[in-house]
Length: 180
Length: 258
Image (tube, rainbow over all chains, first blue to last red; front, side, top):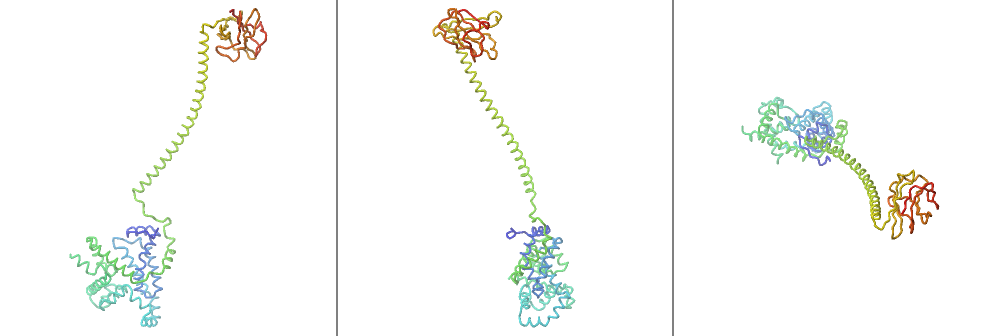
């Protein structure tokens, strides 16, 4: 029954707020792969990616009550939940410690071209690598590391307006490669 | 404002990817509400981005979904939530239930009616049969009466009036005697029914001697008696049931000369 069921975004949100199991199942089937890719671009550790993806869907389930269609579409909303959850993990103390201790192995793996590097070649990362260096840094800091534009301006010692302009032009380039 | 330039500015991508600040978001939402092409561009970029993401990474292992469904199981609404019934459907459902109840009651009522009618019909059939039977009885009686009437008015019939003897003057019986066949018939003009265990017996007096002319049992109207070739007088006595070979003269009821 659920397999053939097609929901409009409005119906889906309504049913999720009604705590419908089939609606949640549908939501997962339709969005898990793209959200997984988002997390995969930020968290290089595959095992942790799975934990984050699970955590993200629990968050979506818990927070669907506060979702407001007036403020944005469902995918945009979920994309930000996924990206923020991934960034939160990468920034957490426990994660950093673990990364420091395994930094040597990582570097070795990177140079050897194993799975850790492979994440750089999927999703948005792959496209970002095609940008000019000055644009790439901005996307890296904002999208993948979660810095605000203000923070980036301070960090890079460039005016906020320059950050905005460069980021915008980086994004329009990204868009054209996404559409290509 | 040049909408196309705005759409091309990168603001939409910045917003969808979560990089826009509050001010930019507020402006974009205003533009989205005002210009359908902005709303369309947002939807378009979302779809393209989703597609690109899906193409770039493998699907997550199925174990994640299984774990999620298990983890959230207690929170799912118990009855599978279906789309809320539309108002008209609700009214239609209510109406059909009312119609069903109405129809069921009508069926019950009609069923009872039919049963009652069946009963009445059976009673009528029985009544009809008894009426037909009665009618046949009356027809037979009528025919007998008609026959009697024809015989009584036959000119060849000799009529002998037999009034009651002394003490029984209110009685009256008539003998009809066919002069051709010599058959004798008797008709009670006024005779009480014979008491239980007794019968009326007709006698012909031939040359001064009584001759048995038959017992008047089970007879109404004109009763056919025995053939009497010759007689000068007829009389009736009350005898024990079945009749007697000789008349009990003390029980003489009526008598009449030919």
